[in-house]
Length: 234
Image 1: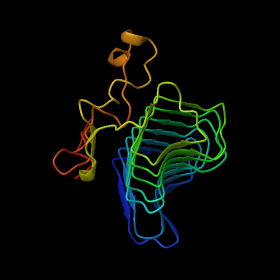
Image 2 (image 1 turned 120 degrees about the vertical axis):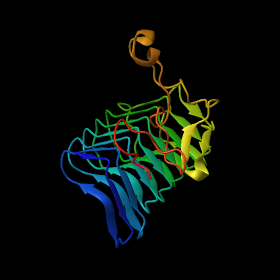
Image 3 (image 1 turned 135 degrees about the vertical axis):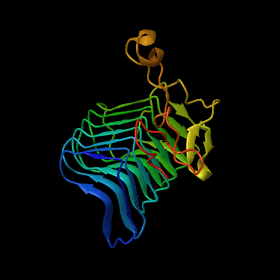
Image 4 (image 1 turned 180 degrees about the vertical axis):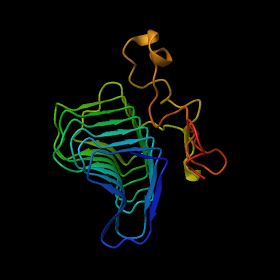
């Protein structure tokens, strides 16, 4: 397990990575940048059942997060300003969850190579050429409660679900300054997939779209809060 780690690779040649693992591994509160060459990847996760939770992948010349295996979990991450792809599920695998992430400013925000029995909900995908792209649609996948805003094309080969927000500005506070918190008027607040149990469950059964909202995203004056220790983003 990696917790509160940061890796910056600015000297890559060919395919290169900030983090690359081929084992069962979990990243929590980690930051990755791979900006030194043409094919930089922030997190390359190819071991079985990888997890990236509340992580920050940015300014990578290829992909922010790549998953090439089964049983992955990408949750609560901010994936911003990556050249080719924000999150790429890059092989014919399945049973992966991509939940409550904010994906911003890539050629393709969420790129899916034939996956099955996977879930995609409570994500915000904004300011991409294509928001979400699936090479071959699979009806066993679940897509709903996602916000697609300010993209040239929102989705390709995807049935978005009745509760998704299309052509909708998520209303970030200051994305140019890397502040991806939501304004109080954001349509993504309290409109995510409801918790099972309704008002008797956590947060009265209400969830929001995007990265973990009780936390601030990285910006110069309001660092992302953590449960303990120093702020991850300094």
